[in-house]
Amino acid sequence: MNESQQGGRAGGGNYGRGRSGGGRSGGGGYGDRRGGGGYGGGGRGPRREDQRRGPPRGGPYGQPPRFEQRPARQVALATLLAAAYSNDYVNEHLDRECERGELPSIERRLATELAFGVVRRKNTLDALLAVAVTRPRENVEPALWMLLRLGAYQLALCDGVADYAATSETVELGRWLGRDDWTGFANGCLRSVARLITEQSIDGPSPFALPLTGGRYRRLSQPIFADPAEQPLSYISKAFSLPHWLVERWSERFDFDELCRLGFWFNTPSPLCLRVNRLRTDRDTLLAKFAEAGITARAGELPTSIWLDSPTRIDQMPGFSEGEFVVQDESAQQAAEFLAPQPGETVLDLCAAPGTKTTHLAELMRNEGRLIATDSSESRLQLVPQNAERLGLSIIETAVVTLEGTNIPAGPFDAILIDAPCSNTGVLGKRPDARWRIQPDDLEELSRIQLLLLLAAADRLKPGGRIVFSTCSIEPDENAAVVEAACHFRPKLKIVEQRELTPGQSSDGGFQCLLRG
Image (cartoon, rainbow, N blue to C red; front, top):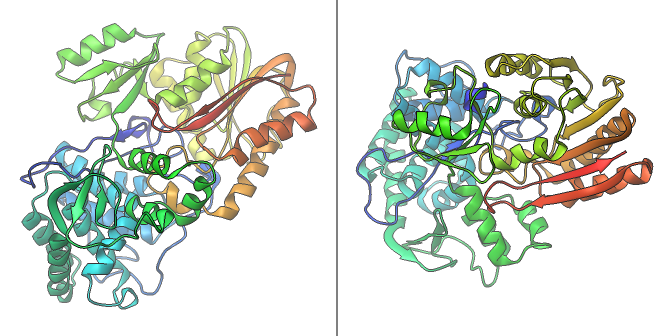
């Protein structure tokens, strides 16, 4: 994933005549560091939810037919099917399909919303289809079920798509796949989904309440969810499309209302956030450039952050080619600021690819000193110098290391940033695969790797040096528990300050801890 495609959740927009009032919103976007979730560059692939049958006829394994130009729905379905039959992240397939399909900007935004929205709201869509589909799930081919999800998403959760368009265009995708035998069945199923969706809003959670975005619920014509008064966790899991095991885990810390708030946050699009390159420009100048180009943007809460309120191609914005900004969420920007590297220092950035935080460190150092960026993925590490070159930064060196950090450079270092591989549970909205990739047994392995990285960093720190340990997780096992264990094994480490970032309080969730050695 290139730098221009990172950052917050893209807004999407309207794509035609839809139902009026209380619009149904989807959304999609890209992560600012490790797209898709899981372990980042060196992690395991997704667990396929269904491997009963092979791909549909008409294309190579896991792929639909190829045409030079394809509309958004074809690109979205091609992306979803390709991701289902591979270990790659959905955003990686989407990038390739959009380029192959030669989509204009508005079609690309729709394809993004559809592909990301279907992945994100999978549990919700399956609950709708369980009522609407007349066959047992095991008797429906996986590719056909994916097509039905795509149609159901447009009918239930996508702003501005008319029912007739959602149904007819999705049914036509069956013919595009060479499966004319699917069309009648798909048409009937999607018409049944449409009958479930009403124009009425509903005040709060109930078996009839379909969560949309921004705290809004739409009333369904019949109950499809568990009664939240009797089975609150089941309701959260299905209605907000979150893994049941994760909802159970969160229920030990959060009450029902907070779980609903988190569910809305992880399913509601937010604008992209930019970080201004202070070595090239300032925020006011960049905002003026955007305004002149007709781009709606506003100053963020941090001195170098800008929020984009109008969807646009990042690499076509004024100032991009000049290296005046990079896409980065505000919570991610705080990590480098917390470390506060100084000009002339020797600094290490562990788990650095693709380099968004690395370049922030270099900017704070005013491009003076020595900055070593390491990562376990050689291919992803190659993105670091590419991003640095665009931003005009020359002090960054790179080195490939093991996932546990056993061969990181000896140092010693004045300051070390550890943006550790994690479960991504604080950023489930912008990383659509993350909620389905992570499993309960992964947390123990992740915390083990995190501890090894922190111990290795402590051994390479100058006396009095600084470490910032950062994750985009909201799991205590990956955060405070790791820091406490490191301080036990390396008594010289002392906690200076730690921050628990709650999702939805101006930015995504995560954890940051400043230590001195």
